[in-house]
Amino acid sequence: MTVLYGMIDSGNCYKPRLLMAKLGVPFTNVEVSSHTGQTRAPEFVAKNPNAMVPLLELDDGRRIAESNAILLYLSEGTRFLPEDRYQRAMAYQWLFFEQYSHEPYIAVRKALLTFPERAKDATPERLAQTLERGNKALGVMNRHLAGNAYFAGGALSVADIALYAYTHSAEQGGFQLDAYPAVAAWLKRVEADPGHVPIEWLP
Amino acid sequence: MTVLYGMIDSGNCYKPRLLMAKLGVPFTNVEVSSHTGQTRAPEFVAKNPNAMVPLLELDDGRRIAESNAILLYLSEGTRFLPEDRYQRAMAYQWLFFEQYSHEPYIAVRKALLTFPERAKDATPERLAQTLERGNKALGVMNRHLAGNAYFAGGALSVADIALYAYTHSAEQGGFQLDAYPAVAAWLKRVEADPGHVPIEWLP
Image (cartoon, rainbow over all chains, first blue to last red):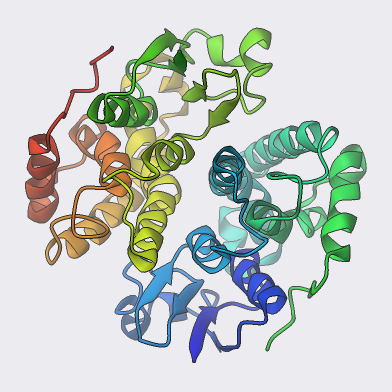
C-alpha cells in the first residue's frame, strides 16, 4: 500500500492527505515529526536525503518528495489537473508561487509563533519580514481571486489545494484575512468542494 | 512572437533562455531589471502582480510567471521532460527542491555578495545561514549525482536546466564546488549537451 510519511500539523503534509482523501486513494500514514528530530534521523534521511516531509512511498517502494511534486504526480488524469496546456501551466505557476512567495512567509511565521523549537528564530526582524512578504502573497492571491473562482482551469485544482494548506490557518501566523475578502470567499469554496477533509484527518 | 521579460544576470531568467535556445524557439528578450526597480514599476506589475522575472508572454498575449513553470510549459512533448510518469514526478521533485532548498540560499548568497542594493541585507547571520543551507543543498545534489548522470529520466531534463542555472555560478556566492565532485562532473555534462549557451546569451 502507498505510504505517506508526514506530520499531522504540517500544511505541506496536509496537501497530499487532502488530495488522496478526495481521490479515494488508500494509504498508510506514518508520522515523522521534525519537532522531535525524526526527519533528520539517519533512517529517514536514507529515504529522503533532503530530510523533509511529506514523502510519498509507492507500492513498489519508489519515493517522491516535495509536497507539490506529489500533488502533480497524484493528480495526473484527474479533475485536479487542468487538461488544457496553458491552464496546466497556470497550475504550475501557482504551485511554484506557493513554495517560493507564500509558504516561506505564511507557514514560517506560524511556525515561528507556535512551534516551541522555533521560538529562538522569532526575532522582531524575522517577524516583520515574514509579515510583510506574507501580506504581499495574500495581496497577489486576492487580486487573482477577485476575478476568478479558482487559480487554474476554472475549477478546483492542485493549485487551490496547495494554496489552501497554509492560507486556511494564516491567522495563526498573525495574518488578518478580513483584509482579503476574495481569499476568504475562496477558502469557503475550497471547503465546499466534494470530499474535503480538515488538516487533522487521517485515513 | 514570444516575449521573455527577464534580467541578463539572473539564473532564474537564464533557465527559459537556455531551454528556448536548445529548442530553437524564437523569442524577443525584454530586459526588466530588479536592480533599478523595473520589476516593481506599475506597468510591469500589471503584467505580473508578483513583480518578478522571468515572465513569458505568448504570441496571443497570455503570460506565464515562475521560471520552473515556464520550463514545464515549454518542455512538454520534448526530450527535456521525461515521458514516464514516475520519472516526470522526479523532474517535478527536483524543480521544487531547486526553488525551496537551493535557490533561496545559493542564488541569494551570490546576490547578497555581488548586488550593491542587497549589501545592507548581507549580515553575518544571513551569510552564515545561506552558506550552511546552500551547502546542504549541494550535498543532496552530490549524493544523487554520485549514482546518477542526471536528475530525472536518465537524461538531461528541465530539472538539470533549473539546477544548473545557479549551481554553475555558486562559487560567486562563496561555495566551494571542489567539495562536490559529482556536482562538478555533472556541470560539465550539462555544458556538453547539444545547444548549450552561456548565461549572457541572447537571441
